[in-house]
Image (cartoon, rainbow, N blue to C red; front, side):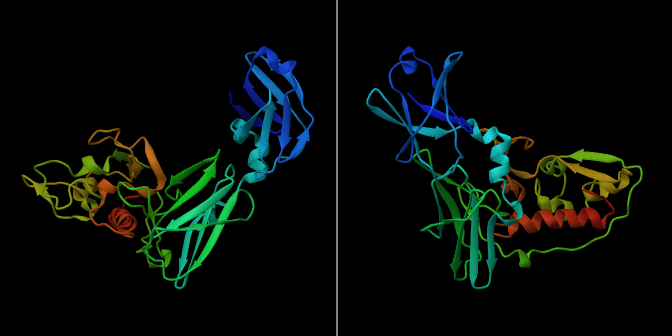
Length: 303
């Protein structure tokens, strides 16, 4: 038997006849609070008044047994968004020479931890469901992940706001964003765009094409390539007269136990797919994708 907090002031569970007649009680922390009970189709609705605090513990006592109340559909409510919507630009890891600040959004969690280079640290709650911890030291290139305590279970995950993660592991890299390669290459405005869609892998995977970096971001930086005298790669794109290249998804995606797909099942939206990258380490994913974009811009193509 499980009870779920589905909205502000509303707990639901599967209905059974005894609920309405045999002294069901609701506790917030150690205090009993008044409830009204009603049947809604095959569910029991337990309604109560009062503000929701994420650190409150709710429990049901029924027939002499105590049941925890788990957060569920309350996250779908506009009130939840208003109460817990964070500043997204401040989530992730933020490295400077002698410190690194870690922030994670975990509004349903009773506690949060960051594990850096295999050392576990408890984080401090701030507001809007955000936990934070500032560590002193040189953490550039360090490997880390978050752990949160939710519904009495410890959940481990990569940092969803990291820019770089470790292949085949639930780990992220700390990067110094001041070191990222960046070139501001201006591209003229197009009033009548012509858009060409392509897959990063398929662009350079032909076995007869002389690419050094087949199926990779860096294949877009290789110029002067030909097959039987005809241009391939980025030189071929230039001959098409298109103004924009539309890339199929380049975020880290799940292969669904296969060897390849077109990327429409992303796992992390802020990191790039490992198989499109030649190098390894914290900066390879970022800089190789940027090298591709720079090369397209240099050749007059928007992305």
